[in-house]
Every structure is written in C-alpha cells, then in structure tokens.
Image (cartoon, rainbow, N blue to C red; front, side):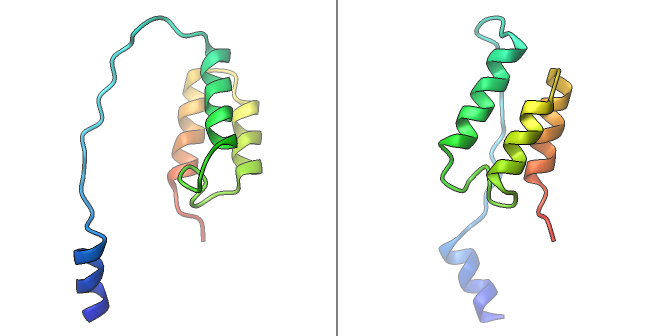
Length: 80
C-alpha cells in the first residue's frame, strides 16, 4: 500500500489533451518513413511494450494511414 502511495507522489500520472492541426498535405510514404525513423531513434518510449524490430516490420507492412494508426494502437497495448 505504501509503495502505491509513494508511486503517485514520485511518478504522478496526468492526462494531457492531444490536438492535431495539419500544416500541409502529407504523403503516406513520408508519414511511414517518419514513424520508422522515430522508432530507430527511440529511447524506449515507443518501444516500451513492444520490440523495435516487430514495430518497424508492422509499420513497413502498412499501406495506408488507417493501418499506421492500427500499428500505433498495437504499440500502445501492454503485452503479457
């Protein structure tokens, strides 16, 4: 019980709203490359719950924006 209380003090969790505004039109390939580049330079944030190789493979197999979002959702899910 004490550990849980101290965890909230030292590692508080907060929710932040996410907003998006499109600055210009983006080609799918550009978004896909940016995502792969982010994984390559990641410091265990994107790959906290998944292996970088598996995530990169999934991103490379995507052929549209919807599939990139699905890869993102898969990445965010803690694996057992």
